[in-house]
Each structure stands twice: as C-alpha cells, then as structure tokens.
Image (cartoon, rainbow, N blue to C red):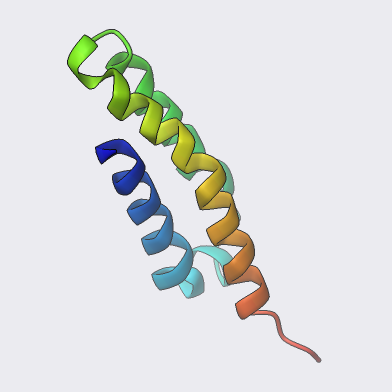
Amino acid sequence: MVGLVAGVTVSAVVWIAGWQRYAEHGSGAALWVVPASKVLVSIPLFFVPRWRLTAVGLLISIPVGGLIFLGSCFANFRYH
C-alpha cells in the first residue's frame, strides 16, 4: 500500500503540478524517466521480504500514473 500511494503521489506531482515544466517545455524525457525510476527502485525491494509489497505497489502505480498523464493531457489540450 505504501508503494502504491508513493508512486501515485509522485505521478500526480509530476503530471499535474509539473505539467508546464515537464510536458510543455521539456523534451518528453519524463514520459520514460518516471516509470523507469519506479521499476529501478522496485527491483532491489523485491529481494527484501518486508519491502516486497511496497515494490509491487510501485509497479502497480505505473499504469495509474499513465492514467493521470492521460487526464493531464486532456485537461491541458488547447483547441486552436
């Protein structure tokens, strides 16, 4: 549960609060950096039995973060 909440919080901060910085004026690197960092953090956590559920939560937060990204895309879409 901790991993899921932490992963969703990071995605929400990046895609909702940081939309101007990361999406409109950035190179698009955040599209792969955010999920890749979640995977890289969760790999060593799988080897520690107490943190295994946290690693699973981080991996589950990747598709939820994708939905947050799509929602931010629709919310910031300009009709010109």
